[in-house]
Image (cartoon, rainbow, N blue to C red; front, top):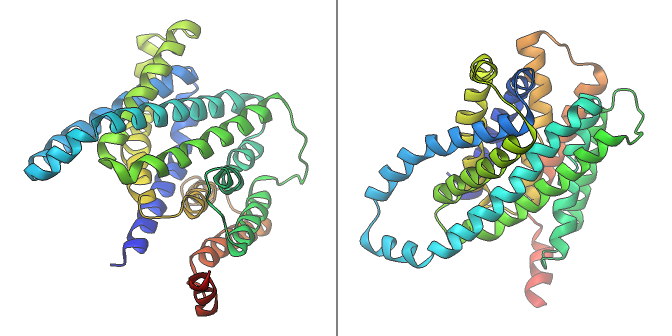
Length: 304
């Protein structure tokens, strides 16, 4: 299988898991606060990866272990940074949901697909015309999907979601920087532990969770921790290792599409014609950005 196709499929799978996890997150928030939910799901995610890391380490050659030992500082620094931005993003998203509509929250959060190439400019990553066209199509598709009323009036909750989008964009670029240099599974595990610790601090300071409340929410917490965090965020790191961060963000934004499809299939929430058109436009954007470059462009590039 082509390497880029393999990494693309990994990100599609991650987006699928996140899309179905929306129900779990909503139900969990009925019993516990944002910091509590985020802390528990990340600690579970780290526990899921721990045995995987042990098995993979046993299979590594002596040369690989020596190299990874030299990369240890980079691994820890990268994991902490990724966890810091993940903590900000996930908690801002949860804070904003009660103060805005779900559709508007989804639209504003997904704005990281614009912010990634914009911020990438400051990292010396230039996006071509086709990438920007794909981003514009994706935003149009998300608008049709999430803004059924056609209005966009920013409220307090909307500002939380925009902050979430910015944090996710920075997290994606941070992963893009560190993933090629270190073991992706270990990077993911440290990211979860860091995010969990930071969220636990917020939990102690601002929330008062009870054992009864956690027990009532254990199914959504377990799903969000084991699959949405442990599996999906690891797939994100592994998948991003072989892809342009702008392309990766476009693929992962399909979470919004998949969550609507999940509601249609599992909860009998039918999609309107407007939403179906939005889905089609989103998929068109993904296909467009992955088409191979024309030879003429390659010749011009080589001459430069």
